[in-house]
Image 1 (spheres, rainbow, N blue to C red):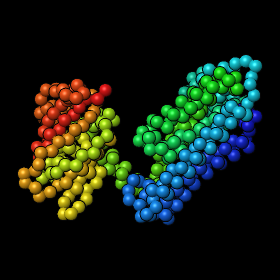
Image 2 (image 1 turned 90 degrees about the vertical axis):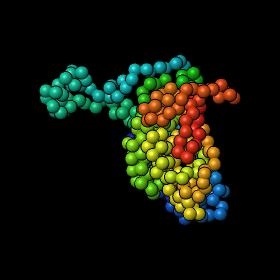
Image 3 (image 1 turned 180 degrees about the vertical axis):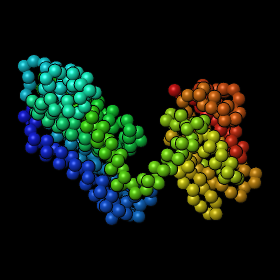
Image 4 (image 1 turned 30 degrees about the horizontal axis):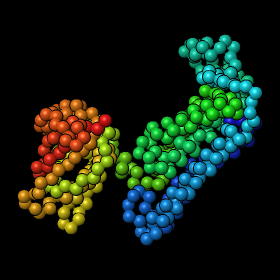
Length: 359
């Protein structure tokens, strides 16, 4: 950030704008979508023009994020003049340290903290408040990035604990290097630290506030997820769930308890829904990007031959856990089309299950 915008008024203004965004956006979004009969969670919407309106909503969110990026680009590049030389500052948190002054140094403060208690902090004096203000402004300015990225794009929501803050760090890293190469500003490691911290705060605000406001069933989903993770932690496929490729398979089942014991308790699939359709019990299970839809009690006897193919990484570990679970999987086989290793075993109702290794 440019030093000329570093002032208490600017900090208050930016804080107010960010707080308004965090508090108002999810509330207004949910209210407007509810009024117009739009489902934000992938379900069927009551409005016949839902696809158009949801596309318009997505376009407005993307436009808002793009405008914020333009403001950020103007503040970090266009508002600055070219410097005569390069300026690099790589000492981490040195500005925050220099903002305070002590009689014997900070190492002495830490050692005396255990003997004199919190009274030792009375010897610390603030001498450069502008350095703290600058760090705070850099941090707050990145909060909307960490907040809007998962709010706008599904890709960030799928890994909401890592992807938003990771991209915020990359944006900050790219910005600092562009400032260094263009000589429009100071290459400052403290800026990257404060920017990344701001992205992390925005990410946490999305998880703890925006998601809660826009998902009324969040408590039920959280309880279900926690229960599933506790029960599935030692199951066959739980540790490989992040590498399981996308697929959706519909299977017929004669015994719901057998399906539950094998796919949920042993393999680690997560139960999502249980419904009734045309007199049949339907179970929806998921693991990673894989979905299984079971139609229990289809009334067919015998059931037709069925197959389930799963693509996952870490086949040796999966094979070991299959053996621990008492599931006979035999030796590795080779996919005749890709040449990759496969494991084959049989599930309830004689379902032929094949796990193919991915790189």
